Image (cartoon, rainbow, N blue to C red):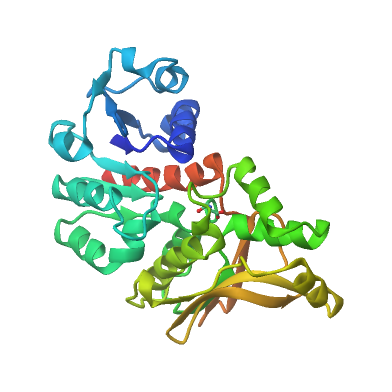
Amino acid sequence: MRIAVIGFGTVAKSLLKVLAEKSKLILDEYGVEIKTVGVFKKDGAFINTNGLDLEKIINSQNYRSEEEWVEAANFNKIAGELNCDCAVELTPTNVETSEPGLSHIKTALGYGMDVVTANKGPLALYYPELMELARQVKRRILFEATVAGAIPLFNLVRNTLRANRIISVKGILNGTTNYILSRMTSEKLPFKTVLKEAQRLGFAEADPSYDVDGIDAAAKLVILSNALLRKECRFKDVNRQGIRDITPEAIELARKDGFLIKHLAISEDGVLEVAPRLVEVGSSFAVSGSLNVVKLQTDLAKDLTLIGRGAGGVETASSVLNDILELAILRR
Ligand code: HSE
């Protein structure tokens, strides 16, 4: 399996690290050899069509001086020369244009590659079109890492809830807002102080308004609704309210009555909503810190609740790697 990794942020670097660490296990357990033939940054790429030395890339102090560095190499321009099976699209989310991810995905499909992505923008804006394009060229787009980081939602439904109808999805899909609300509750700290903490800890988006205004959670809810509820919808269809106006006083009032304020994402009866809501102390949504929780209501299996890490480099790379392996096994 020959892959190209596009993007060089936290998730991409973690993926390269995990690929380097796990290559022997992957070969022994699954009989799959994953060769990374390109790693694309903003200003160029590491290219070696025989497979890159990932340790060298991760540890490089001066990447421009590396033998395999090609200045200004752009995936859309050179994709055809890579002889690559799968593009791993890990550039930052943009919910206005969804670029550069959208072009990368279209280019990859155009050259007959499968796609694995952690980038929410292209799917939040163009899920139906991208899936149709993949169907036309007989390739797959796998996107487990786009929603709830390490929690295997799409794989769970695809492989272990076959023939179930997913009736509704309800959850906490953004780790940063959950962290902020949890700390405001337990430590009685003001919003701005805790937001800074979340940024320092590294799970906030590059632009934290994506977290606190519910943009990130709304994008995830759209992907869940398209993929699991089979509801054709887009980012603009979500009723969205952030958490900027939640005060320590409001949290304290709720707590006195036995409730917590949580930032919930709900897709039910054709309505998509992201907003602060009261949940009972002790309910399955009363998870604290940066954890995510997702409750699926299904017709056969009934209710399932999953809790796990929704952010973090290695955690998200876990889902990306599993998607790559699924495609590799299908191609064997
Ligand atoms: N900023 C996101 C979060 C990262 O806090 O959940 C994962 O999408």
